[in-house]
Length: 85
Image (cartoon, rainbow, N blue to C red; front, side, top):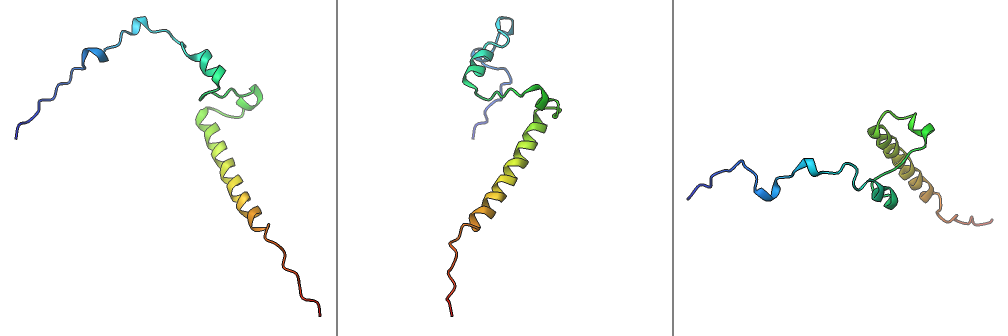
C-alpha cells in the first residue's frame, strides 16, 4: 500500500489577495433582501449585550410558544354532551 504525502501548501487557486478585497461589498444587498440580517430598534438593542443574547431570548420565546400551542391544542377537544336524566 502506498502512502500519500501530505502537502500543507494550498493550491494556487485558493490563494486570495486581500489587498483587492472590498469591505462590506454585499452589505446593501443583504439589507435589501433581509437575508440573515436583522436590524433592531435602538430601545430593543439596549436590552441585549450581543447577538447571542438575542438568540437566547428568541429561542426561549419559541419554546414558550410551542408549549402554549400544545396546551391550547388539547383544550380544543369537542365537549361531550351529558346525558340528561
